[in-house]
Length: 331
Image (tube, rainbow, N blue to C red; front, side):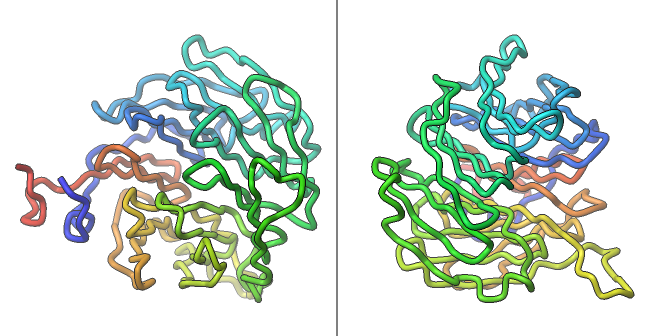
C-alpha cells in the first residue's frame, strides 16, 4: 500500500490505550518498526507491539522519572532522560528491565535527546545551555558545546551531521567528524519573534534530509530548508480548548511533530486534541484528524516501516488506514 494523500486522509483510530495516569511525554519506534515505547509523567515506560496492537510490558521509574525515551539500535534497549533526583541519562535493558549505564554531566534537566541513525552515538541538550555527544559504550561525555541559550538538537538521517537550535532563534549545523571546529553552517535569526513563539521544544530532520521542523512552546511549527535555512512555511497550531485567559498570558502547548516516511507530510499534535496534517510541499493544511484525545495531543510518531501513526495525551491511540475507504487499495 502506498502512502498517498487519500490514504493518509483515511486514517482512523484502530486501538486506544488508557493505562497511563498522566501525560505521555515521548514516543519512539524500534528500528524495524515492530515496537513502540512511551514514557509518561506518571513515571512509567510502556512497550507496545505494533503488529498485534497490544501492550507488551511496563517498567516504572518512580525514583528517577522518565522523559525523552529513545530506542537504541537494539530492540531491547533504550535511553531516557531523568526528571527526578539528578539530570543523568539512563541506558535501560528491556530484556531484564535493568539499567546498563548512566551518563552524567548535565547540571540541569535534559530537554533534547536523539540517537544517531547509524551507530551508538547519541546527542543531548540541556537547560544548562550545553549540547553533549555520547557513546553508549562509555559513560564519559565524548564532546561538549556550550551555547548561548536553551538548545534543541537532532541528527540528520545519514548520521553525519547534527543540528542545534539555539536560544529559540538560530540553527547551527555541525559535521560530527569535526564538530570541535565549530558549525560549518549557521542560519541566524530564523525566528525573528521568539517572544511570540515561545521556547523551541523540538528540532527534527525530515527522512529525506531536505527539511528541518521546529516546534515551539506556544504552538508554532516552522519548517526550514535544511541546506539554506530559508523558512519554507510556519503555522500557528490551535491552542488548548480551555486556553482563554483574562490576563492575556499565552498558554504553553508543547506540541510534537513527525514527518511521514516519504517526507511529503508533517503531522503535528494540537492543543485541542486534534492532529494536523500539513503538506510539506506547499505548507498548506491537508486535513485534520479527530481522535480520542480530550486534552492536548502531546506526542505524535509515524512508524518508519509500517502504515501506522501513534498519538497520545494521557490516552494512547494507534491509527491505520481505513480498509473500507475507496482510497485504500488493499491488493
